[in-house]
Amino acid sequence: MTSRALFPASFRAISAGLIRGLHTPESKADFEKIAKESVPLVTFEQGERKEHMLHGEPMPITAAMQDAQHAAIPFDGSIMQNLTPTMTRFTLIGKFAIVTGGGRGIGLSMAQALAEVGVGGISILDAHPEIGEAAAQKLRKDTGIDVRFYSVDVRDENGISEAVDNAVSHFGQVDILINSAGIADSNIKAETYNEQSCYNASKSGVIQMTESLATEWARHGIRVNAISPGYMDTALNRVPALEAQKKIWIDRTPQKRLGRVEDLNGLAVYLASDASAYMTGNNCVIDGGYTLW
Ligand SMILES: NC(=O)c1ccc[n+]([C@@H]2O[C@H](COP(=O)([O-])OP(=O)(O)OC[C@H]3O[C@@H](n4cnc5c(N)ncnc54)[C@H](O)[C@@H]3O)[C@@H](O)[C@H]2O)c1
Image (cartoon, rainbow, N blue to C red; front, side, top):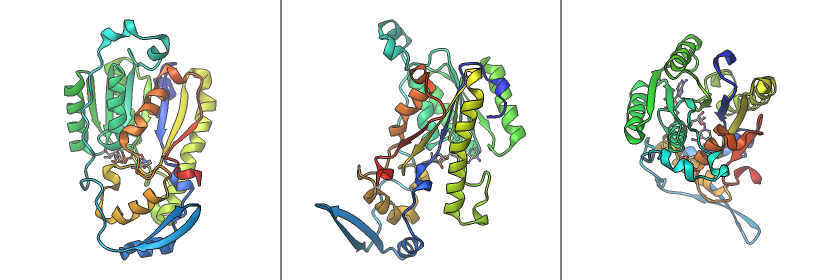
């Protein structure tokens, strides 16, 4: 969010955060065991806690380093006249969005969801040019909407300002900002503490910033909310080194699965749309119950 002056009154900002950092029962010992591919697995059978070790080859959940591919479906504007007022509030006709980190994973999935509810245009900002360009092209082809790609690192303040200025001059306005670019290196460097504490501090910062900006910007008609997903099945986590760890995450999630990227889409659309007109400063946890126990 570079300059509030850039954004019209209906602007909404969403940050994809992560609550897992605030509730991390994994100990250092867990990680040492995982490194040796012996995984401590805790189960609850008829109320009794059982812990045993898993040995052997990790079980791949999905193809390594890739996201599941879903094509976005174009929104048919002719249905608007048949929608009830409640359904109409979930659409984004005449709105324009910026999605950082929209080249793949959660950001791309949310961009697709915005397109499926009628957003007028999307600017994808991503540090990875090949991924971002291909994603923007495909989304444009799949849905017919105006999708632009900006190759920019969110840590580059000038680069971000230029990209946002360009998006505003192209579309005439920006109404929705989804921040889905990673934050691990953005404020407290991982090596300063250890990776998890750095991550936790960053996530707390995102939540605090969400609340502060929501308070300060409410008078401008700008709403700011955060999404804190649990462990998601994205390319970020589809690496062999995490296969064993994923078994623990799944075991500790009451719904007994990782999140699918599309599990966050409904919430993203809700927050970006008038359906959530009275919600601001909220941290929305969507994690299959991971943080319940
Ligand atoms: N996957 C999960 O389990 C999970 C869970 C909760 C929250 N998150 C958070 O959600 C966000 C997206 O996660 P994901 O799984 O889709 O990740 P991902 O790695 O699949 O996608 C992230 C995208 O952001 C881009 N990106 C990374 N750093 C950038 C930067 N500095 N500037 C611009 N673009 C940058 C990447 O090129 C990539 O296209 C991250 O902030 C992540 O921490 C992920």
